[in-house]
Amino acid sequence: MSLLKRGCNSHKNAHSRPRSGYVLILALITGFILTTIGVSLATVAASKYAKTKRDTYVSTANYVAEAGISVTLAKMYDDTSMTGTGYGPETTLFDSIDTGKATYSVRVEPGPSATSRYISSIGKFYNPRSATIPTSIQYVRVVANQNTAPTNYSIFAGPGGIELASGAKLQSFGIYSGGKLTLNGSSTQIGDPTNASKIDVANVTCTQSGTNTRFPYPCTETDKPLRLNGNIIYGQVCANSQTNGAGVLPSAGAPRGLITSCTPLRNAINTINRTTLISGTPSTYTASNASCSNTTKSPVSGTYTGDVTIANCLYGFPALTYIVGDLTITGSIAQSSDLTGAQGSLVIVTGKITIDSTATGYNAANANTRFISFHSSDSTGCSVQPSCASFPDTASGWSAIRNSFSIDAINLTNGGNLFGGEYTAYFGNVAVTGPSGSSNELFSLSREAKRLHDGRNSCCNVHFHACYTLNHISRYFTSGSSEKQ
Image 1 (cartoon, rainbow, N blue to C red):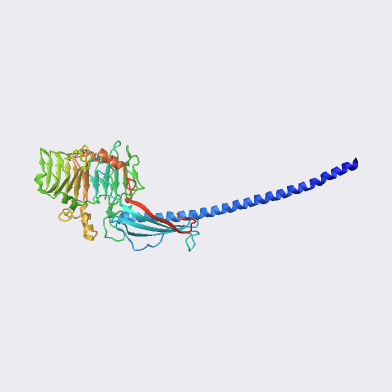
Image 2 (cartoon, one colour):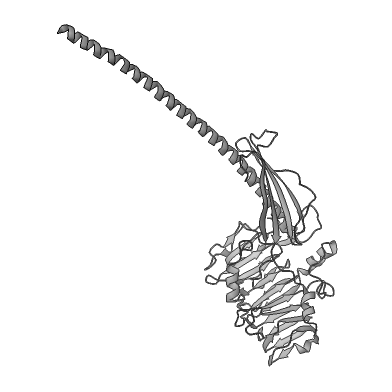
């Protein structure tokens, strides 16, 4: 028995020894597999990290190229005819130990139309900053299409600006001044706590830095566009280089007051092709055919030579009235004679426009009557020549513009409900006057125009930069990326 037991035990022990070996081998295999997986994961992580770094460099270079586009657009805002023959010198966007170095260079070429430009920008990113070869290079090319500026302002003034006399109170939703906005005397006011105004002041009344001659040009921060003289504006104001918001108060519908992070469009007034307009209505009449006194009158479209006076009348303007002279409307009610037309009426005057104690109404289609004065210091030249849309970019032209600043092209005086009118001073200024304490109520934008004003496209917003629409036509990498963008 003892021998038998010893034999059995010997047999059991013989089988247990190989089983321990199996466990050891299994452990070795498991460890090898886990090590292989760990190495694979580390390799994948390292690869992903490297790709992420490359993509970050690519994105940075792309953003730098886009920045070159934006800077160029800002320059085109002042010079819409800007073109170049090659890429300009590289401009450094940033350069530091922590962030590396980034540069861009830009080329501007004539576009597919007269009002468009091709803008090509090359963005380069260096990491480290001391590298001589860019870590990534990105190329971006766009077509910049210059848009027509919106006309949904009640008052447009060129570089001559807008000036309110002592006691004048102006309520107008949309106001644009290419020059200054001045509130003189006391008790002078634009808007009120419940009637918002939205105002853009471009402040283009200075000489271009470095030239000492080119004029007018946007002013620097030392020459402020708002001259309130202790008076108040209620509403939203975007004024170039204006940082002091004293006297600009928010109101219902415009809760922001002065907006310091915006720049109004420099040349917001649309170019008026008088030659084409007049050719559509070639008939010429004397001023008496358009004048009116104590009656009802609706003249036909055409050119009227001489000063037109409308006094105490119920007056209907035709589609186009072109007056070679002055226009004075006193104590009257005037609107488009086309009571349902969507275009309203256009009244172009080579001389001064005076609106005195008068109401202008919109028609049933919410269409306004637009009054445009070309009155300037060149009263026998550019003012009366239909082919003249702007003074030449020469010393004589700059002088003519400067001399036009002191000329009242439009005078809105002694109050009036001018809800259905738009008033444009092409070269001179807009003056709002009246007896001390008077209320010049100019609810000038019609309901439809106000809706359009609030709903402008993203390019021409209520407060906007240069009005261009960009179409990306090329965007690709030249180095530093594992994938095309």
